[in-house]
Length: 636
Image (tube, rainbow, N blue to C red; front, side, top):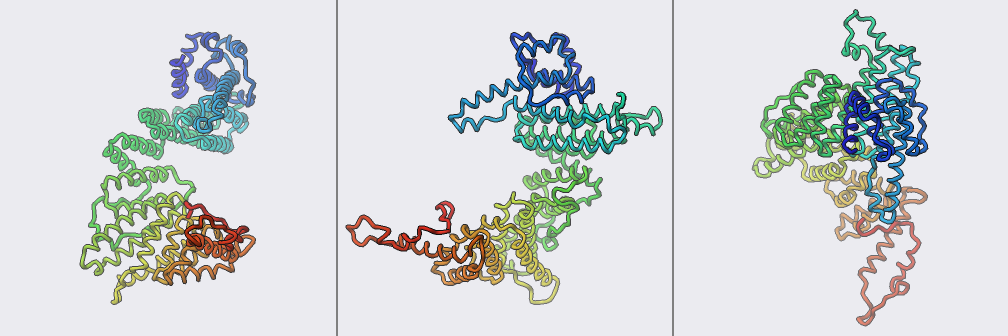
């Protein structure tokens, strides 16, 4: 029985309906009901998809209502007396739901037995029955969406709209599932088979009252020149279905690769290549996934060679200039190193063309591997990331560009520290260029999203603080170097101002201790920026910010204490919620004094073993009704 179930599962995944028909005819329907009251879901699903593929009657399933009552074994067996392939698709769907219902009932009883152990209960993942229910739901969604498919006539636009709604609903339903191979793979493979049925349905045009628009659009061609390729070229509905099928197979292959099933992933890619006739851009996506499989298997040279071939073809198609792979001298050419300032053609989330999307998705792993293997110079890598940013801005590209600037900046700093002429010539110019690129790209990364916040923001602030402390030596003589360095210094200050104004304030809570620790910075512009950021934090998050400042307010270093007191005095008039920040500052100051007195107090005598709050710490005893929140020790 397990072998038969596996064979049926492979049959409907591959669309081998002839095998399903032959097997069902040989077996005479299903195994004896005494051993299997309800057939396996994969067998039912194979028969149901076979009937749908053969009859092209998708609208029959619109009468299937979810949920359906569980059928008894005898009712299920009697429905199959005339043979499995003679049953209507809706009857097979009902039997499938009955089988799923029994599986879910068993799952519920199993989970209830773990109710006393929350950890064991939460560790249970989605069961096959739940996945099967999702699959039947997708089939009924398609039937309900396309029940009036024949009413669109020859209007390809209406059908295109309906297909887009169906694909989007399927995508959202899959996005709600955990990204686990065993959960999503059956659903994605079902979608792939349903795409085939939709494609055959809109191409047929042979049923009475059918739309037949694909065939009609072909009618303008000369007789005898109709082919599958011309059908795809003449109807964007067929093109849309084919693209969705390739992307679905690609998603399933990615899940298989991540789960470690590389042979399965390779099989999905090969099957998609042979059956879908993908466009050059979609074929590039398949080749990119194939290269990632090779990389995971340790064939790094083959993987990189494959992606280089893919990206070269796409560059030629998109008219992107090629970058020399020669390795320039790391230090003699840094003065001309470009700072990423590309204006992206598309913002994040905006649609790209298939070729542009394939190029971006192929370049990211290729550049990661070239950094790992050190097979391309860092300036060339920065230029390649700039090419990506010229097509589409993304946090990953900005962070990677900033990281490359950071590596070069650290390398030049190490070499310069060993050189007696490190402060002469073009060293300062090179360092300022790299610092500007580092700060700007890190900032753009965290402005796009918080994915790299913990890596980018602390490093950005560290470089900025150190840059403002040492500062570049601007040449006394007028010339290009002096103009460039002066311009970049002003540019860095502008970038920090933009960060203060545009970055959400809650992001600065991550680096609050770092900001407060540099409150006595020597550069007055740096203190001005720090003062602005801390004041905004006191306005939006006073409870979290005050406790970082209380210790600095009582610092023994006069400059640090004075600057902290200046910020607190400016914040007293800020309104935060129903009351002013000044009230919270007064309460926090008094409570801090009381807690310090408690920590520094000594018993009146050596024989005293008990101290009373009401007698020895009267001020602390009167601090019971406060509006401030006392943090835990690990939060400080």
